[in-house]
Image 1 (tube, one colour):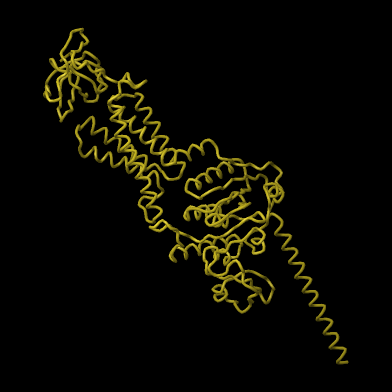
Image 2: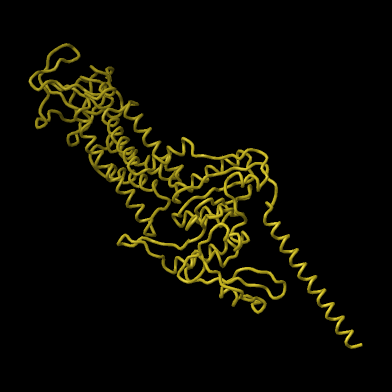
Length: 512
């Protein structure tokens, strides 16, 4: 009897064990099938190519393309990544943006390479799809030392980044420890199994120690890619095994089949606007734009009125600030600072002649506006930000010196420049007199050393004063500027101010 009972127990135990094994096998198969299926059906997909070094310019390019995709009704966004990484703060910004994108499902598709900052960006997406031999990981932060060599960042930078990538992985359903191992070269991660429900995942020692049910987890084996002195980097197939990626795909057609897209995939390529913004943000092009704009502004100030100088200057500075706006580094504050600087310069020229407080203030405001428009911060706090500020300053200073040389050349040859030559005032020959508007000959202009006018003197406009021009006082011709009004040739004017070499005149009313 006892032997029969023991036999029955053994058989029942075998049955239960077999049932449990079958249940576990069915659960595993169902889980794999669930992983192979997209979370839901999508109506319209849009693909944005994410290529090259991650910079603020690329960041805002992605934002513009996301706006286009949303306007096109896309509910599936595929970010095709092929990047070795780039700026850390920009990578974090993009990852956070994808993480909180609530109007579409985001998929990071990595056909070949998604390293460093690109891996961080991918962690912010809802899913990661990789090419079988693609690479993901190696996100350890580095910095460039004073000797020009790159080194691993200090602990005060690594620790916050480790928390950031852990949080990204946790919110998107990936093992946080493996994400942390991408940025911590000394972290060892283990495959662990729960003793109760046989679930398997990946954890590091510090996670096991802090877990309330740490005794329920059993270490199976370390993950080879997370060994010490190595930043975790995995291929596409391995990433799927480690639950970092959701599936492998060789090309875009595989992506379309996976998500069952009925409509044609919208592929968003760089447009003419994007290319123009990129070109205008190249430092040498930016400097050239500033030089041309400043010289054109000088021409307009020399012969005021809505002329060719004002139009060219307006176009140059509009293009400069437009490119910085779309590049993500400028806001309206920089534009206001620059315009305020121009106003101060105009006050210095036409209201309080001389080189004083208004002129210096105007120059400083213009430089501040141009400098701040090329960076997304006010004052640099890191080495990279300092380098960015120095680069912008070099461009502005270089443009300033080029402007001085160009302005001198324009002033010297102004009358021979096509299109704008009508603005120039023809000077008389050094050995001859001049013929005035009344047809009479007059002697040559007085040399600079013989300044022949005083406040209250009267003269006749020998050329249109717009508001700069030439006036004859007795037998001498003098370059003058009006108090702001335009004066026609032949009108009488009176000197109201003499400051240095600047003579300010006002038209005399014939009725007085």
